[in-house]
Image (tube, helix red, strand yellow):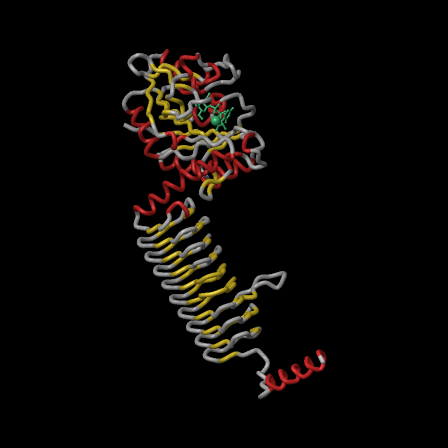
Length: 452
Ligand code: UD1
Ligand code: CA
């Protein structure tokens, strides 16, 4: 019964209360902009066509929309005259579409595709317009859903225009609305602006549709889902809701979180079965962790792939391009960037490994540094399989350490080392037998002479 769906996403509001140079809908939740979250939601909910309404000059918002959903049509709303006017900015997309229409707000990023599915089902049951409502803890400035004695939705009243009796209603408008009408543009065109704000309210569509004999339906969801972000405090609240959900999903998929509330996931984090994550771990975007791997406490990962059975941390930092093979160990205070580590390779303590590759089963000693930058260019360090790099070695890239080679501790390696060779770069040890004993005796005599 479902018909083709056009989703219009409103993103033209200025978002003054964010007090930010960045447009409101580009603020991120779980590493992705609110706008991208809502575009993804529209896709998951089965939108066949997407339109995004931005304010003139919001080039960054336009770019984000197109980067996330290349097929989206982006429209500019010349002046912010209200939510109905904003939908009308997408007039061309609406005129070209035959089917259902759903309006979403880009600053309301936590709605689930299942909830949008319930709205569409309400259209399938014969509603001409369906509103997503919720029971508000504090109805405040939300629009109120006004129902008749049979519980049917008759109007949405904005708080500023509501009577004292209407203000006592706790069932509120989330802003999400779905339409199945022959001519949505005609409905929108009949909305006026005779109200407290002098704005064209999308919510007035309810009364217009009903006057034409259409039914208005309500679908109710949890308040958490329709949290609207207007200020930084609400952004943090939305982040908290998102994280709670993501942790529950991860655990349901077989991930062990010892202290779930201290683990921060990204919108695209992929965690395998039996992954163990200790407390205080942060995942930036683009991290994949294979089955059975352990991420120990206080580690920070972004843009990294961790192979099955690998062990990372405590206190490890994996940066973009870190690719850890099966059973790799990366220990405390080790930073890995743009380096592939082969199966079973180990770097257990205090190292910077940037740009290059480490062969399977190679061992990188404590304090090893890949000197990858000469102030102008980045260079690569390549370490062969089974090589052993002693502690506190500086490997000055570009440089290659052959398979099975040894690098002596404390060496500064500037030239390639052949497979199975030992490279040592430090002065020969000079030892003076009995020196310490003589030194102590001489100092004792000097001290005695002074105090005499
Ligand atoms: C709106 C609803 C209200 C609902 C509330 C839920 C109307 C008239 N009111 O009120 O019933 O309870 O959301 O949060 O719809 N926008 C534009 N262009 C405009 C005006 C708004 O693009 O000219 C966009 C904003 O960027 C935002 C959304 O529409 O994403 C909502 O606008 P906002 O002004 O925040 O509406 P509310 O007053 O919160
Ligand atoms: Ca709002």
